[in-house]
Image (tube, rainbow, N blue to C red; front, side, top):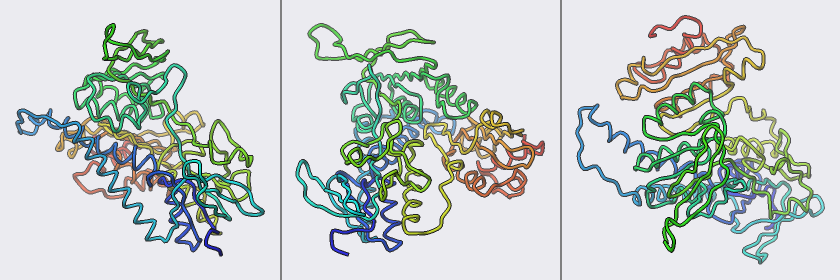
Length: 474
């Protein structure tokens, strides 16, 4: 095989792209990865990783405010917001270097630039551009498009990057705002609300649907809404944004304010220093030659089958660019699965019924599988078990008693259909339930599994027992 010929070429070095490239190389396929910017994509550089560093700082600030509960008095607590943001950027930088190392370790040809696809006989010709100049041409038997997504906006909510921000500008904002309006109460909006509130901002969250975290079980959403209101965060649900405008605070003033006009359950004009638009994603499908090749799109995303094949032979799409759920761990799973199928391995499809979702606010929210409402809509006779963290000895010991574990079982067979956790360390607790669901665990198997005491994870065992009237500690 010539130097510029590859078995697999991956467009995009995000979590999905680099995972696909690594797995393809592990399976003996000559692999190249084309990336125009930093490795790791949105997740590592502008999302998952740096945002968790920011949220940890926010968690510490909230903890300091209630330190007297633990018998510890603090005075003169201050913060350096720019240093908080710098720490998050340093962590992102270190993580990006880690991915660079993985490329070398796995002998992946890393090509700088962006690739444009063209068909050439039974292969795909890829022109690599840096700016407007073609710097390289390569061919691929299999091309995996992993170009990700970008923040979505709507008419009247135009992001200018200065006063009206997307998450990418929000993550590097090095001065704490005095006030902020957040449009969208999904995971991104609610995480930013928690973060900015911790550092003194007056926060208003506007959500068009009936509850914050609208994809989550309503009981979990209610807990988060209640805890946020205790923190002073204003959440407006069933409220639509009509438009966002930027105006001067006074004639001839250089200072500007943001006016968010809303209607519905709340009719108001909300004034704030900045606004954050967090209302979903659009696929990065433009500029890669997909349209010229006739690659089929659906609602702005690349349409694929269960093997991640597009309608054009030899071209695949994984991660955010093929549509929701827009989660880094889904992109990684799809990338690995796609590479294994390209290599000819007989592997099961990714099970989208066992995909955990997490919102890293405090209290955290994590879920997998069906909500109680969805299970009933599908005709299941369900048994529901709940265990509040207020009844957990470990939760009381660490001072985090808000929230609960809620499990939904099929009454006929006892199989776990869905799980929902709101509370401290929910993001870690969901792994046990996800594994159980993937193995088709029943309530009895969960109850009979001895859990260490005292742990938050005991709440899972207790919730399962509660569903069948066997709970011990409640």
